[in-house]
Image (cartoon, rainbow over the protein chains, first blue to last red):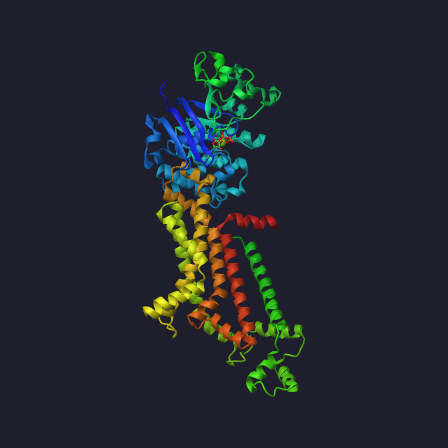
Length: 314
Length: 317
Ligand SMILES: Nc1ncnc2c1ncn2[C@@H]1O[C@H](COP(=O)(O)OP(=O)(O)OP(=O)(O)O)[C@@H](O)[C@H]1O
Ligand SMILES: [Mg+2]
């Protein structure tokens, strides 16, 4: 199948006072049309940075290298105007943390109508009608009322849905959603998952869903990319990954899920400034050998369509 | 806008005004010097002021009653628009005030407009091109303007532009022409704080999530800037402009004096020197009222600009 998005040796680093923060290192994977890839990993491993690197939304202190091919064109090589034509219209992005993602001093309606007009060249009246339709499709009871509200007057789940509505405006073929379920209670999480499912169903888009909620990832994504300290360490179909985890980090994560007894992984991630020369997970791994600590492991193929970054599978 | 917060703000303003009037009167009452004696001394020379004469004179002026009774008289008169008559000029205090207000108000508006344009303009420019040439020059300029006292700049400007170059009148008041120089002095010294507030406001907002969202939706820099960031920066700017205006209400005294302007501040200064109590009392009180009105307007502006302020008022209720 033809690929929609192809990340080719993508790395992102930040200049900071204490040194170069290598937040994303040499990421390679592709997303085909209709495919939903879940990007999972613990906090600080670089998921959001990778997501924002794709649309070049990072502050100027970030330097991204590699190719980001979308519909055959390299997003990393585009000029400002070209990348702006992709943002919102071809690739929609839903920010982590809905509370901060909406402008606090503008009404929901203002922000929603603005997004629709940027994407579609609609008149104000058309945009307003369209906005009402989208809100209704995301099961808001009273769309007209929501349009008049300020972000602070909405609950977390409503804000998340409002953001989803804004992302849906341009009917984009690709969606990047960053932690759409973080910090929500069970009921609202259900609503949000439903709204995202609806988004995918209504627009037929592919996507990259960033989360550290494994349960959500398994429900929503057909492929998983597991990230650790800036690297992808395991990649493959969700079902296979869950039924037979390869990388010791994935096994550890699964053991820490509530239904598996919440055995918390020991230790913490290595610094992104001074990386160890060998495997980045070695210090927390029960199977680590001298070779693991000395040499950095490459991604290797294990069986059909599965990749893992671990010496155990040589 | 909802009515309740507006009513609340107005009530607070009225209470503050009452308190200001009481405080002004009280402070003047306990300040040293017997006005009756001072007045008589002035009229007749320092010789021959007898105790009984002073007392009779005080009675005539109504200065021998208790504090509260005197305050009440003054307050009731004030409500009728009567703030007493100047010992010195013999005019009603209120008309003396109003005849000088025009000059001071023009000066305050002119200088605040200058600092608003300079401050917000330079602040925005330097934030947009952070660490660029404009930013560096602006930061240098604002550091200087913060550390130079306004009276020093006033004297310098007066010397250069009025005395040496002769572009502006020195002593005789010629309306707006006489106001330009002092307004520039006040505008320049006042704009430093505005530059800082605007610049840091924009920079703080740049890293906010809503800016990332706005960019991710395909908005261009100008749309993000004008449509999103500006309104968020407006609140601290309004605060700063009001506090500038308020500072001018009192701070212009020195400038008016240096430039010999027929303003409120200069008149008050002369009244202070000659211990013209009704004028001092009336002017300080009226300036206090202006401050109360300005603060209330600023509060109402907050309500109009920022929904979070509105929300806050409901939550506290
Ligand atoms: N602007 C920045 N400057 C310097 N370092 C940054 C910057 N933004 C992110 N980082 C660093 O990059 C690393 C990855 O951050 P990122 O936000 O991608 O983590 P994450 O996987 O999304 O975590 P979370 O699950 O908490 O959202 C972190 O160590 C963070 O400190
Ligand atoms: Mg994140």
